[in-house]
Image (tube, rainbow, N blue to C red; front, side):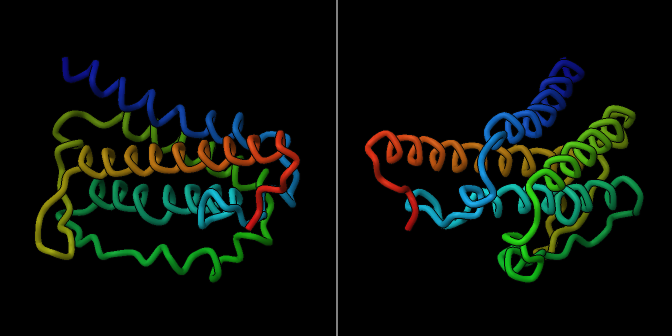
Length: 169
């Protein structure tokens, strides 16, 4: 039963790069970078944010827990990333490629881990412990949030376009 649940988690992880590729494929750079009425973040910011959270937040935490003894998992200030990392001046194709590659590597690492390894823990800033599967659940929640927000933005843009309105703020 546990292995079936793990496979379900891995499949969910695999879905996010596919979703981003399908959802954002063919959109112009101008549309990807546009501020919209439907979300505070342009689609390009979502894309780079998701990519960076995999490498510099959730993925980093998972790797640290797998490789260190009770690592301290300090908070990460992701709200500064769009400006600090110039998300809106970066290409979407690069983000998609890097995200898909990193996500595939993370999945391979997790698939190779045994049950005892997945139960390893890190310590949050508040002193509570979280294991690899707990961080993995946070990552999947993060994916779901961005899928919903991107989907809502795209639906809003489509509705506005069919009414002859430009869907930007």
